[in-house]
Image (cartoon, rainbow, N blue to C red; front, side, top):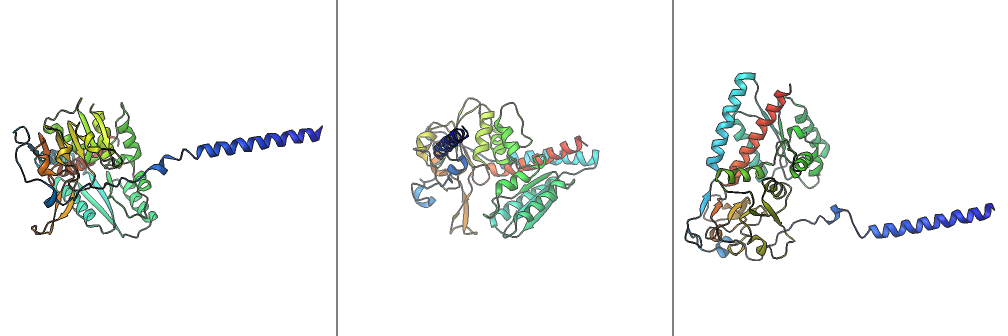
Length: 358
Protein backbone atom coordinates (compact mmCIF):
# COMPACT_ATOMS: atom_id res chain seq x y z
CA UNK A 1 0.00 0.00 0.00
CA UNK A 2 2.77 2.39 0.95
CA UNK A 3 4.61 1.48 -2.25
CA UNK A 4 1.56 2.35 -4.36
CA UNK A 5 1.14 5.65 -2.51
CA UNK A 6 4.80 6.54 -3.10
CA UNK A 7 4.40 5.81 -6.82
CA UNK A 8 1.32 8.03 -6.95
CA UNK A 9 3.19 10.93 -5.27
CA UNK A 10 6.08 10.59 -7.74
CA UNK A 11 3.60 10.70 -10.65
CA UNK A 12 2.04 13.86 -9.26
CA UNK A 13 5.46 15.43 -8.75
CA UNK A 14 6.50 14.50 -12.29
CA UNK A 15 3.29 15.95 -13.67
CA UNK A 16 3.78 19.15 -11.66
CA UNK A 17 7.32 19.68 -12.93
CA UNK A 18 6.21 18.96 -16.49
CA UNK A 19 3.42 21.55 -16.35
CA UNK A 20 5.75 24.06 -14.69
CA UNK A 21 8.27 23.61 -17.49
CA UNK A 22 5.54 24.12 -20.07
CA UNK A 23 4.43 27.26 -18.27
CA UNK A 24 7.96 28.61 -18.09
CA UNK A 25 8.45 27.88 -21.77
CA UNK A 26 5.20 29.67 -22.54
CA UNK A 27 6.16 32.74 -20.48
CA UNK A 28 9.47 33.05 -22.30
CA UNK A 29 7.45 34.17 -25.31
CA UNK A 30 6.29 37.21 -23.32
CA UNK A 31 9.41 38.96 -22.02
CA UNK A 32 9.26 41.76 -19.43
CA UNK A 33 8.37 45.14 -20.89
CA UNK A 34 11.77 46.53 -19.99
CA UNK A 35 13.41 43.99 -22.28
CA UNK A 36 11.58 45.41 -25.30
CA UNK A 37 12.33 49.04 -24.45
CA UNK A 38 14.51 49.63 -27.49
CA UNK A 39 16.27 53.00 -27.63
CA UNK A 40 14.71 55.60 -29.93
CA UNK A 41 17.48 56.20 -32.45
CA UNK A 42 16.28 58.68 -35.03
CA UNK A 43 17.94 58.24 -38.40
CA UNK A 44 17.43 61.14 -40.84
CA UNK A 45 16.38 60.07 -44.31
CA UNK A 46 18.41 62.85 -45.87
CA UNK A 47 21.49 64.99 -45.42
CA UNK A 48 20.66 66.99 -42.31
CA UNK A 49 22.88 69.95 -43.25
CA UNK A 50 20.69 73.04 -43.24
CA UNK A 51 22.68 74.61 -46.07
CA UNK A 52 22.03 71.64 -48.37
CA UNK A 53 18.52 70.57 -47.45
CA UNK A 54 16.36 73.55 -46.50
CA UNK A 55 14.66 75.75 -49.04
CA UNK A 56 15.45 79.48 -49.21
CA UNK A 57 14.04 81.47 -46.29
CA UNK A 58 10.51 82.49 -47.26
CA UNK A 59 8.30 84.71 -45.17
CA UNK A 60 4.81 83.75 -46.34
CA UNK A 61 3.01 80.46 -46.08
CA UNK A 62 1.30 78.48 -48.79
CA UNK A 63 -1.94 80.45 -48.50
CA UNK A 64 -0.22 83.81 -48.75
CA UNK A 65 -0.20 84.71 -45.05
CA UNK A 66 2.73 85.63 -42.87
CA UNK A 67 3.41 82.84 -40.38
CA UNK A 68 3.29 84.05 -36.80
CA UNK A 69 6.54 83.47 -34.93
CA UNK A 70 5.91 82.41 -31.32
CA UNK A 71 8.57 84.01 -29.13
CA UNK A 72 9.05 82.80 -25.57
CA UNK A 73 11.15 85.62 -24.12
CA UNK A 74 8.34 88.21 -23.69
CA UNK A 75 6.17 85.58 -21.98
CA UNK A 76 9.04 84.47 -19.74
CA UNK A 77 9.81 88.06 -18.77
CA UNK A 78 6.17 88.61 -17.78
CA UNK A 79 6.07 85.41 -15.72
CA UNK A 80 9.42 86.15 -14.06
CA UNK A 81 8.25 89.63 -13.04
CA UNK A 82 5.25 88.11 -11.29
CA UNK A 83 7.46 85.49 -9.61
CA UNK A 84 9.85 88.19 -8.40
CA UNK A 85 6.97 90.20 -6.92
CA UNK A 86 5.63 87.09 -5.19
CA UNK A 87 9.04 86.34 -3.66
CA UNK A 88 9.34 89.93 -2.41
CA UNK A 89 5.95 89.57 -0.72
CA UNK A 90 7.04 86.26 0.83
CA UNK A 91 10.16 87.88 2.25
CA UNK A 92 8.24 90.82 3.69
CA UNK A 93 5.41 88.78 5.23
CA UNK A 94 7.14 85.67 6.61
CA UNK A 95 10.82 86.48 6.16
CA UNK A 96 11.43 83.40 4.01
CA UNK A 97 13.09 82.88 0.62
CA UNK A 98 12.57 79.96 -1.79
CA UNK A 99 15.67 77.86 -2.44
CA UNK A 100 16.64 75.71 -5.42
CA UNK A 101 19.34 73.04 -5.22
CA UNK A 102 20.95 71.77 -8.44
CA UNK A 103 23.34 68.82 -8.65
CA UNK A 104 25.71 68.63 -11.61
CA UNK A 105 27.71 65.48 -12.37
CA UNK A 106 30.61 65.64 -14.79
CA UNK A 107 31.83 68.31 -17.16
CA UNK A 108 29.41 68.26 -20.11
CA UNK A 109 29.40 71.74 -21.61
CA UNK A 110 25.69 71.75 -22.35
CA UNK A 111 24.84 70.64 -18.80
CA UNK A 112 27.16 73.27 -17.32
CA UNK A 113 25.51 75.89 -19.51
CA UNK A 114 22.01 74.83 -18.45
CA UNK A 115 22.96 74.93 -14.77
CA UNK A 116 24.49 78.38 -15.21
CA UNK A 117 21.28 79.63 -16.86
CA UNK A 118 19.15 78.21 -14.05
CA UNK A 119 21.30 79.72 -11.31
CA UNK A 120 21.35 83.09 -13.02
CA UNK A 121 17.57 83.05 -13.40
CA UNK A 122 17.17 82.15 -9.71
CA UNK A 123 19.26 85.09 -8.54
CA UNK A 124 17.42 87.46 -10.86
CA UNK A 125 14.01 86.73 -9.28
CA UNK A 126 15.25 86.26 -5.70
CA UNK A 127 15.44 82.46 -5.34
CA UNK A 128 18.43 81.31 -3.29
CA UNK A 129 20.62 79.02 -5.46
CA UNK A 130 22.50 76.00 -4.10
CA UNK A 131 24.79 73.86 -6.25
CA UNK A 132 26.80 70.70 -5.81
CA UNK A 133 29.26 69.60 -8.49
CA UNK A 134 30.45 66.00 -8.57
CA UNK A 135 33.15 64.45 -10.76
CA UNK A 136 32.30 62.36 -13.81
CA UNK A 137 33.41 59.16 -12.05
CA UNK A 138 31.49 59.71 -8.81
CA UNK A 139 29.72 56.71 -7.31
CA UNK A 140 25.98 56.29 -6.96
CA UNK A 141 26.44 56.44 -3.19
CA UNK A 142 28.07 59.86 -3.48
CA UNK A 143 25.25 61.11 -5.68
CA UNK A 144 22.63 59.67 -3.31
CA UNK A 145 24.33 61.52 -0.45
CA UNK A 146 24.15 64.80 -2.37
CA UNK A 147 20.46 64.30 -3.16
CA UNK A 148 19.76 63.30 0.45
CA UNK A 149 21.44 66.44 1.79
CA UNK A 150 19.21 68.59 -0.44
CA UNK A 151 16.10 66.57 0.45
CA UNK A 152 16.74 67.20 4.15
CA UNK A 153 17.83 70.85 3.90
CA UNK A 154 14.91 73.08 5.02
CA UNK A 155 16.32 76.04 3.07
CA UNK A 156 16.00 74.11 -0.21
CA UNK A 157 12.49 73.69 -1.58
CA UNK A 158 13.30 72.36 -5.05
CA UNK A 159 15.86 69.71 -6.01
CA UNK A 160 17.14 69.24 -9.57
CA UNK A 161 19.58 66.57 -10.74
CA UNK A 162 20.90 67.83 -14.07
CA UNK A 163 20.38 65.23 -16.79
CA UNK A 164 21.77 63.31 -18.57
CA UNK A 165 23.95 61.54 -16.05
CA UNK A 166 27.08 59.52 -16.88
CA UNK A 167 26.18 56.03 -18.11
CA UNK A 168 27.40 54.21 -15.00
CA UNK A 169 24.73 55.98 -12.91
CA UNK A 170 21.12 54.76 -12.88
CA UNK A 171 18.99 57.80 -13.76
CA UNK A 172 15.73 56.12 -12.76
CA UNK A 173 17.02 55.31 -9.26
CA UNK A 174 18.39 58.82 -8.81
CA UNK A 175 15.20 60.53 -9.99
CA UNK A 176 13.12 58.31 -7.70
CA UNK A 177 15.34 59.27 -4.76
CA UNK A 178 14.48 62.96 -5.06
CA UNK A 179 11.71 63.86 -2.62
CA UNK A 180 8.40 64.13 -4.56
CA UNK A 181 7.65 67.30 -2.56
CA UNK A 182 10.88 68.86 -3.91
CA UNK A 183 10.79 67.33 -7.40
CA UNK A 184 10.43 70.66 -9.24
CA UNK A 185 11.53 68.99 -12.49
CA UNK A 186 8.40 66.83 -12.24
CA UNK A 187 10.17 63.58 -13.16
CA UNK A 188 9.49 61.53 -10.02
CA UNK A 189 7.30 58.47 -10.78
CA UNK A 190 4.67 59.74 -8.35
CA UNK A 191 4.32 63.03 -10.21
CA UNK A 192 4.38 61.46 -13.68
CA UNK A 193 1.83 58.86 -12.55
CA UNK A 194 -0.53 61.51 -11.21
CA UNK A 195 -0.15 63.47 -14.43
CA UNK A 196 -1.26 60.39 -16.37
CA UNK A 197 -4.43 59.86 -14.32
CA UNK A 198 -7.50 62.03 -14.74
CA UNK A 199 -8.77 63.41 -11.48
CA UNK A 200 -5.30 63.51 -9.94
CA UNK A 201 -2.97 66.46 -9.61
CA UNK A 202 0.81 66.04 -9.67
CA UNK A 203 2.78 68.15 -7.23
CA UNK A 204 4.82 69.38 -10.19
CA UNK A 205 4.51 69.20 -13.97
CA UNK A 206 7.70 68.76 -16.04
CA UNK A 207 8.93 72.23 -16.93
CA UNK A 208 9.40 71.89 -20.70
CA UNK A 209 5.94 70.36 -21.17
CA UNK A 210 4.37 72.97 -18.92
CA UNK A 211 6.21 75.65 -20.90
CA UNK A 212 4.86 74.25 -24.17
CA UNK A 213 1.26 74.53 -22.93
CA UNK A 214 1.95 77.97 -21.48
CA UNK A 215 3.27 79.21 -24.83
CA UNK A 216 0.15 77.99 -26.64
CA UNK A 217 -2.24 79.46 -24.07
CA UNK A 218 -0.52 82.86 -24.08
CA UNK A 219 -0.86 82.94 -27.87
CA UNK A 220 -4.55 81.92 -27.79
CA UNK A 221 -3.93 78.63 -29.59
CA UNK A 222 -6.89 76.32 -29.04
CA UNK A 223 -5.86 72.89 -27.70
CA UNK A 224 -9.18 71.33 -26.77
CA UNK A 225 -10.44 68.98 -29.49
CA UNK A 226 -7.41 69.50 -31.73
CA UNK A 227 -5.29 66.78 -33.31
CA UNK A 228 -1.88 66.98 -31.65
CA UNK A 229 1.09 64.97 -32.87
CA UNK A 230 4.04 64.72 -30.48
CA UNK A 231 7.21 63.61 -32.24
CA UNK A 232 9.35 61.85 -29.66
CA UNK A 233 8.45 59.99 -26.46
CA UNK A 234 11.32 60.79 -24.09
CA UNK A 235 10.57 60.74 -20.37
CA UNK A 236 11.79 64.34 -20.11
CA UNK A 237 9.67 65.96 -22.83
CA UNK A 238 7.75 63.73 -25.25
CA UNK A 239 5.90 61.52 -22.78
CA UNK A 240 4.83 64.24 -20.29
CA UNK A 241 3.85 66.55 -23.17
CA UNK A 242 1.58 63.85 -24.59
CA UNK A 243 0.00 63.29 -21.17
CA UNK A 244 -0.45 67.02 -20.58
CA UNK A 245 -2.01 67.56 -24.00
CA UNK A 246 -4.53 64.82 -23.20
CA UNK A 247 -5.35 66.52 -19.90
CA UNK A 248 -6.13 69.59 -22.02
CA UNK A 249 -8.54 67.44 -24.07
CA UNK A 250 -6.53 67.17 -27.28
CA UNK A 251 -6.54 64.01 -29.39
CA UNK A 252 -2.90 62.97 -29.15
CA UNK A 253 -0.79 60.78 -31.42
CA UNK A 254 2.83 59.94 -30.61
CA UNK A 255 5.37 59.45 -33.38
CA UNK A 256 8.58 57.67 -32.46
CA UNK A 257 11.64 56.16 -34.11
CA UNK A 258 9.78 52.94 -34.97
CA UNK A 259 6.72 54.63 -36.50
CA UNK A 260 6.14 53.64 -40.10
CA UNK A 261 5.63 56.58 -42.49
CA UNK A 262 5.86 59.25 -39.78
CA UNK A 263 5.28 62.03 -42.32
CA UNK A 264 1.86 60.54 -43.06
CA UNK A 265 0.94 60.81 -39.37
CA UNK A 266 2.29 64.33 -38.87
CA UNK A 267 0.34 65.61 -41.88
CA UNK A 268 -2.82 65.20 -39.81
CA UNK A 269 -1.65 67.46 -36.99
CA UNK A 270 -3.35 70.72 -36.05
CA UNK A 271 -0.52 71.17 -33.54
CA UNK A 272 2.85 69.49 -33.95
CA UNK A 273 5.33 69.28 -31.06
CA UNK A 274 8.82 67.93 -31.61
CA UNK A 275 11.73 67.05 -29.34
CA UNK A 276 13.90 64.36 -30.91
CA UNK A 277 17.34 65.98 -31.12
CA UNK A 278 17.88 65.62 -34.88
CA UNK A 279 18.37 68.88 -36.80
CA UNK A 280 15.92 69.45 -39.68
CA UNK A 281 14.39 65.97 -39.30
CA UNK A 282 10.87 67.29 -39.88
CA UNK A 283 10.45 68.72 -43.36
CA UNK A 284 7.86 70.89 -45.01
CA UNK A 285 6.05 67.95 -46.62
CA UNK A 286 5.51 66.48 -43.13
CA UNK A 287 3.15 69.38 -42.32
CA UNK A 288 -0.34 70.33 -43.36
CA UNK A 289 -1.10 73.99 -44.20
CA UNK A 290 -2.02 76.05 -41.14
CA UNK A 291 -0.41 73.77 -38.54
CA UNK A 292 0.97 75.25 -35.31
CA UNK A 293 4.55 74.04 -34.85
CA UNK A 294 6.18 73.91 -31.42
CA UNK A 295 9.82 72.97 -31.98
CA UNK A 296 11.39 71.97 -28.66
CA UNK A 297 14.59 70.64 -30.18
CA UNK A 298 17.87 72.47 -29.65
CA UNK A 299 20.64 71.09 -31.84
CA UNK A 300 24.10 72.55 -32.21
CA UNK A 301 25.30 72.56 -35.82
CA UNK A 302 28.51 73.83 -37.33
CA UNK A 303 28.37 77.36 -38.69
CA UNK A 304 31.59 78.91 -39.95
CA UNK A 305 29.87 82.28 -40.25
CA UNK A 306 29.18 82.42 -36.51
CA UNK A 307 31.60 83.79 -33.94
CA UNK A 308 31.18 80.61 -31.90
CA UNK A 309 31.60 78.38 -34.95
CA UNK A 310 28.21 76.80 -34.31
CA UNK A 311 24.56 77.71 -33.78
CA UNK A 312 21.34 76.20 -32.49
CA UNK A 313 18.59 74.96 -34.77
CA UNK A 314 15.50 72.87 -34.12
CA UNK A 315 14.19 69.50 -35.21
CA UNK A 316 11.91 71.20 -37.75
CA UNK A 317 13.36 72.67 -40.94
CA UNK A 318 12.32 76.25 -40.21
CA UNK A 319 12.72 77.57 -43.75
CA UNK A 320 10.37 74.93 -45.10
CA UNK A 321 7.93 74.91 -42.18
CA UNK A 322 7.34 78.65 -42.11
CA UNK A 323 5.70 78.53 -45.53
CA UNK A 324 3.22 75.88 -44.33
CA UNK A 325 2.53 76.79 -40.70
CA UNK A 326 0.15 79.38 -39.31
CA UNK A 327 2.46 79.77 -36.30
CA UNK A 328 5.90 78.42 -35.41
CA UNK A 329 8.32 78.76 -32.51
CA UNK A 330 11.78 80.18 -32.96
CA UNK A 331 14.87 78.17 -32.02
CA UNK A 332 16.43 79.38 -29.85
CA UNK A 333 14.05 81.70 -28.00
CA UNK A 334 10.81 79.72 -28.25
CA UNK A 335 9.88 77.30 -25.47
CA UNK A 336 13.33 77.45 -23.81
CA UNK A 337 12.92 80.71 -21.85
CA UNK A 338 9.47 79.67 -20.61
CA UNK A 339 10.86 76.31 -19.48
CA UNK A 340 13.20 78.15 -17.09
CA UNK A 341 10.27 80.26 -15.86
CA UNK A 342 8.31 77.10 -15.12
CA UNK A 343 11.22 75.80 -13.01
CA UNK A 344 11.22 79.05 -11.03
CA UNK A 345 7.43 78.88 -10.66
CA UNK A 346 7.55 75.27 -9.44
CA UNK A 347 10.21 76.21 -6.87
CA UNK A 348 8.09 79.06 -5.51
CA UNK A 349 5.06 76.75 -5.33
CA UNK A 350 7.15 74.21 -3.39
CA UNK A 351 8.21 76.90 -0.91
CA UNK A 352 4.64 78.10 -0.42
CA UNK A 353 3.45 74.56 0.32
CA UNK A 354 6.25 74.07 2.81
CA UNK A 355 5.50 77.22 4.77
CA UNK A 356 1.76 76.66 4.54
CA UNK A 357 2.22 73.31 6.28
CA UNK A 358 4.52 74.58 9.06
